[in-house]
Length: 559
Image (cartoon, rainbow, N blue to C red; front, side):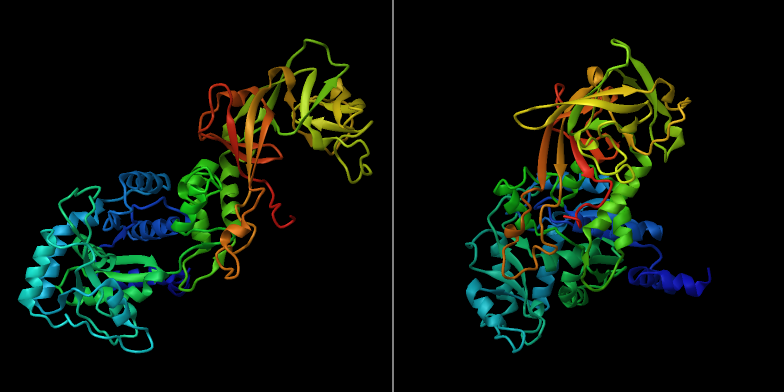
């Protein structure tokens, strides 16, 4: 590939990084992932994680995990621990674990310097007055009557704010920027507010806390971040990010904020507030409910780190917002599981088959391939007996013509996976319900897989489970939580109106081959012809619970 072709293949962030390295602006790349520990990470954060860590890895750099813990009202160590688990599970290692609270003393000193330089002041206006004076983007705002108060007075009041002499809401520290700017973030933004709330790390040491815009860029600079990668919603914050850096002593390296389009996934809501509502109303079982777009929910559902990373890579980096089809995520996860998941037999909607000409009490061991995509995975032995379970849908009392129906019907034949060809001779029907309760079949002894001398040709191959050896498990079938492609985007309806009433169904009498009974939480399998499943943490010693991760085919568009 030529250099020109290589250049064309770079995304815009890679191009910036390469230019910075080639020009000598930076010798090493340092990025950061800065979540606020006020909730669980979701698929949108997964993109931010893969982007910040991935760019650094690609160019031999490093990444800090920094918690933006500047609002103690909503933050908790529970979220800190969950975030660290999620980042590590996705496959990334951080260079340093940092917190904005690590820099509270430095940020305070920086703020004092801005006051001394006449670039910040204490404002005693009420929140309502400040909001009114800021005005609207199309006309200049109104300067606060405190904007030009003496420097010494602001210094004294700021120190007394820190000492806890004033009530919440009575005073704030504001940067003196530009009240006429069309960018509302530049209209004398608040840097500090009074907040009497214990912090999860600093306890009661502080009663004033820095705002995000003030803490973020300075934390980047302190840590030596070269490229501060964030979602497009922070594009309007960048002028303020740069203004703060411009008005403090120079940092080397000086960080550069670069924005990319956030990940908007179809049939999904990622607002923390809305996700919290789903949890609080009991619509889902918790933040890790397998229907949730949280990383913990995707992990519990059985999505793989490699599948998620592949999805993020396929979705790509862009400068404009768009909606990515959730089917692409499912494809990436399915593609990864196809390489790794053991193929097993599980009957979700069972009907019993009695092979009338098979010797009573006899059991054979049938050899089944674990994964045709992975020859080194080997084979396993599965017990076969006179009484079996097959899927109810694999038998029709009045089947279509043989050229259109390759499964079982009266006097129809099909092969049992890894075993024999059978033919249905008779069936038992419940007179009251009209439901078929049992099939009577015969097997062809010469048709055993691997040594078939019967000469019979059948197209249908069915999975099965030996009834005397089967384990009984619970299976939870999950589908998309919302029925609208953009549940957030409809201005006339609440996102809750688009909830899918069939997003979860429970099958409590599913039969599986005995090998599955030793499965552990998190183990992943392909249930032949049914999809990919994993063992849920709700499993007990008495009964395993399996979650369906994804189907083998995309049935959503058909419904």
